[in-house]
Image 1 (cartoon, protein in one colour):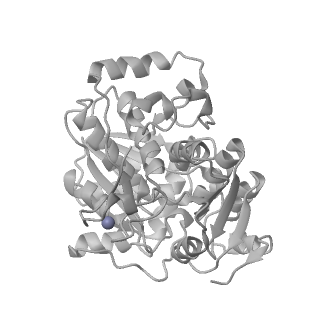
Image 2: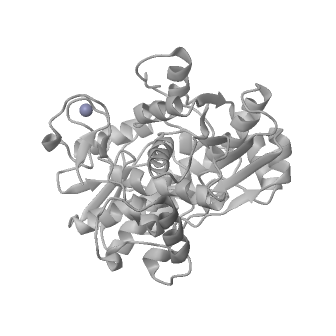
Length: 409
Ligand SMILES: [Zn+2]
């Protein structure tokens, strides 16, 4: 298991830390790919057989695909799991009509144990932290990462420390508290919280933000599970919401693995959707700029994607280029409307997730997606994460009263 910088910056790998960005260029650190020697057919059969197993690691929709995970521990009873993954692929008449598509499916990653896709990466990264002997794990979070980290840390007997930006959804903070996390209010935006945390985290603290390569490794499995659920028939387009872009990066890593192992024979076009008021990646993509220019004050009703300086933009851009994909933004009105439509199919999701459906509709209207192409929208968070409409600050300001520590940085 060797670390490398995700960019060809020439850094000496011995200087890299797995829970920090590259010391030379600031890009995320990644694990050198190690792939199993088994054939595609043997892997499919092995993963299928495990579905009948009662062992906790096999019941996890992440660890069931452990041949694609870094070799963290040979002892499967050390795996920190809550039975994550195993999320359904659903069809809905209202959503398909709304998008103008004949074959639109939804993979709802919000139906993970803590209600967001973050669990698929956190089970791997917290297992890694525990095996390394960490006592404290930390993250900066708009909410979903905090709740996920807190749950898995509790399960592993680790202290969870969450650095909160100014504005987060109250339900998500309540969730992290319920799992016993320590809350540290940093103030400012998510990006300020991230910088604040990295400044404060001492070397004994294991950092679990989306730059952590073990989180990316675990998140790869949701795309593998999707392909298995589609009978290994690759959809034409996969649309997902974009905040910190860790999910798109994980999709890119998964597609690399799936192609290299012969598990799929072509790539889907990936489309990532940001909110208009929090669209730094879309701006970069549209302008053809070499680097991402952070957005100082990102604004959208969708708290999960209210991020102005996404960490994983390089890998995300590579994934879009490799898949002939695209990036687009949608307004808050379109996000709220799409969320209502998803509700009409009895599915529901948090506001940020609905950006995927709003984006699919916009891409169909623009002719980027053909009516008869097979499309999958990835929804990343559960409806109960943000049950309100997002047009009131009351739920967010209620959090302020409960957070004990004010660091003011
Ligand atoms: Zn580097």
